[in-house]
Each structure stands twice: as structure tokens, then as C-alpha cells.
Image (cartoon, rainbow, N blue to C red; front, side, top):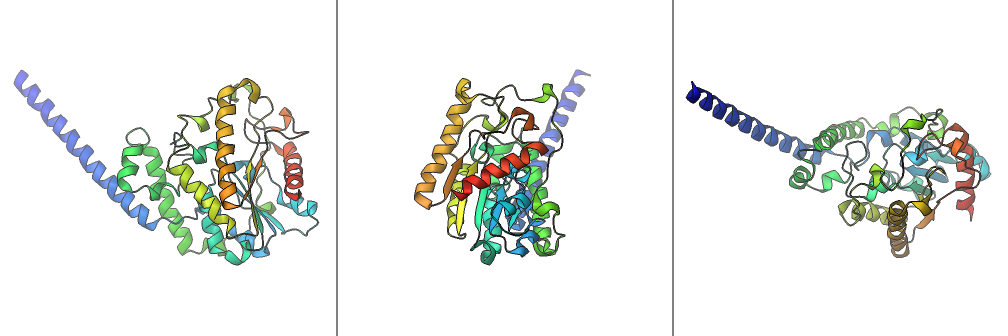
Length: 317
């Protein structure tokens, strides 16, 4: 009886090992195909590119702190231009590599535009590997072997998302979504009309997931900074924005946050000197109160005009 149990355990272990090996082979194959079909313009950006048909003078791109915070209708008024002169093509977890791909796709539009792109710590921080925010255009540049050793086994969700997004981006490219999609509402801005409950706010920013396992010396930072540099050659002007966090958080009392964000600012400032783009570091905004924030990063509806007015005023300087 005992021998039968031992043999059964061995067979089960062997079966599990073979299953795991087969699964890894299948995953590697999927990743190899995804790397080939991947398009640098994700669906979330492709559906906003029809906004470029107005040949805007001011193009806001980047991540969620532009997507939810910059009202291009108000921005157009502030620069004394008609509606459509400013558009918002930012999207959740947007990255410079994707915006660069859009600029290469529409060179005539961007050549005469001021491009304003917001960046977040997770774009540069090699320590952030979660599926929700890992830059999808960085992944195919790593290659299958590095993808697997970097994300298995605990971050397999990041690889699964990449495979899905790669095929979705290819389908969008083949369907010419960037030209044929319906024009987004409100010239691209999406406004958050609620404020999250008190118990859901981050306790501090220094330990925020965007700064986890802090490392800005890896391929993420190198590739995304390179994209920002290449943008400068394709636009009339490029401004890179480091947006503020909610006023309830005090940088002077949070050394970890202060040091890490200062490193991001220094990284961008050094690159700007070599490449020519402008850096706008905004630690705080006059008049933007705690009540104007929906969460630690994003303003609510009441904060949008305050943020937009301040940002445009700084761009005019």
C-alpha cells in the first residue's frame, strides 16, 4: 500500500512538472507572437487620435493625471483659440513610447503643435511590475527570455495583459481605429465626479506602489526617456510635466517621497539639457485644495478648471 502511494506521488509530481513545462512553452510561444504583432499605439490611445483631425496647436498627452485633469476646451479659451485648438489624448497609464508612436504616425499634425506630456513614477521605476501600470511598449523590447524571468511566477498577470493588449493593438491598427473611430467627447478629457472615502486614501506617498522597490536605472527609464528625447525632434515644442499630489501629503515630512521624486525630476532635467524638451515640475498649485482631489493623485470635477488654468499659465511663460 505504501509503495503504491509513493508511486502515485511520483506520477503526480511528474505530471505536474510536465504540465508546468508545457505551460511555459505555450506562454513563451504566445509572448513571441505577441512581440511580433504588437503595435506601439494601444487601443486606448488609438481611439483618441481622431481628435488630431482639427490640427490642434496644443496637444495634451501622457498618463491619467492629464486624462482626468486637463480640460482642452478651457485650454483653448485660455490661449485665445477656437475649440479644437487644444485636445487631450492622454489615457490611463499612458507612456511616452506610445505618444512617440502617435507622433510618428501623424508627423504633419505634431510638427506645428506644442506637446505637453505628463509622467508618473511608475513609468520610470523598474520596481513596479503590476499588470495595471507596467508600460506595454517597454515589454516587447525586453524579449521573451527577459519577459519570463522578470515576471514569472508572481507577475504572470502582467504578461497575460501584454499578450491581450498586443493583439488588441494590432487589430486596432488593421481596422484603422486611429482614423475611423468616433470622435471622443469633450475633446478627450474624462472628469472624475466623486471623491473616494477617507479610509481608501494612501497613508503616505513615500510607500505608494508607484515607488515600490525603487530603481530608475533599468530599461524602463532608458526607453521612456529616449522616447521623450525623440519627441523633441517631431514637435514644435515639448513640455514634460510632473504633476502634484494631493495637498494632504507633506513632502517636507516624507523623506522617502521627497528623495524619490527629486530623483525623477533630476533624471528628466538632465535629459532635457541633452535633448531640448522643457520640464515643468509642479509640486503644488495655488488654490488647489484638498477638497479638489478625488484621490491621492487625481483632482475631481471641482479641481479640473484650477489645474487646467494653472498648467496653461505655466506653458505661456
